[in-house]
Image (cartoon, rainbow, N blue to C red; front, side):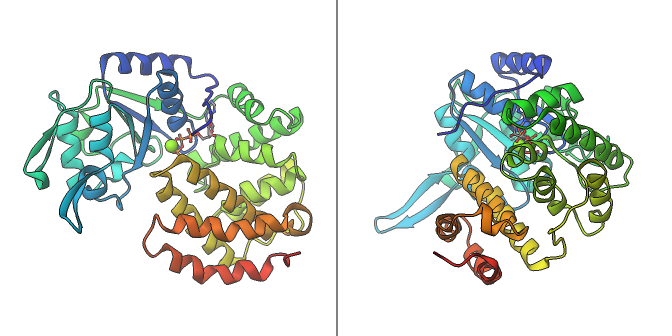
Length: 358
Ligand SMILES: Nc1ncnc2c1ncn2[C@@H]1O[C@H](COP(=O)(O)OP(=O)(O)OP(=O)(O)O)[C@@H](O)[C@H]1O
Ligand SMILES: [Mg+2]
């Protein structure tokens, strides 16, 4: 289903993770967005030939989705396992994203899961006890709460249940250059170096509290990849400036101009389009819980919408892509109640600026 996940660097982190897997120790990974938390676990699960599942525990994930629920059909009621229960029974590897944002009832389940005896009780299913398959492994991630503050955000009792805590910082410049080269080997060395230098400067501003936005390795990879099809400055518009908040956009643009020159066609104040992109991004998060493929599709949709927005329509977008966009959005809508309505609200704005079908 997913492509093989390579990891550049992170030798000692990988060694620690291997140890944790061997000893069945739950691991908490702390690091900013895009530093490679998910990639590391996905990589290891592939190496060990284990099924990998991920669930985002942000405040919207209910105990039903996590543990399971009773459903109704013609024959009567039946039980449907949630993500955790399914993973425990089948010996899958489960990554719990944003564990610090989990709802209280989800936290309660995590507490018993992470205790030494490692079982959970399905109170709604007559108190059935679920014991983990021997191959089941659990990992969790969170972003650092506040700058440099470590895990103070996470409930103490839960934090103490992770026998291994690994903090991941942004990669070093040389490591980041290698990562970008790995994903976008055709991007020029000069552009790769500029991207990395620019990111370092933005991260310094972020750490000083001068900027809200964090540029991730993921953003740089996206820029480098897109720079194969368009001028690098436009790629940076799409992958970085477009995501800056109203407060940040000026300083981000200034910094970008320093490295890549002034932009031209970019319209950062297109509010309706930004709203649409935000909706798409949110759905991508939700959908990623269900399938890795779907997320990839959503990212594609996001990129296509960005391309349209920045005026690349005539050269960059094929009419088949435009037709495909609608059905992709529709197929994703099933994963989120009410999403379709939200999409409909914004869709007119998109079609208004799309190229006419040929
Ligand atoms: N050390 C690395 N080696 C290879 N690829 C990396 C590395 N670090 C980051 N990447 C790449 O950067 C992108 C983002 O990584 P990933 O999704 O693993 O980050 P994350 O820490 O899980 O972010 P988030 O907090 O947003 O979930 C991916 O495309 C990933 O392949
Ligand atoms: Mg992740």
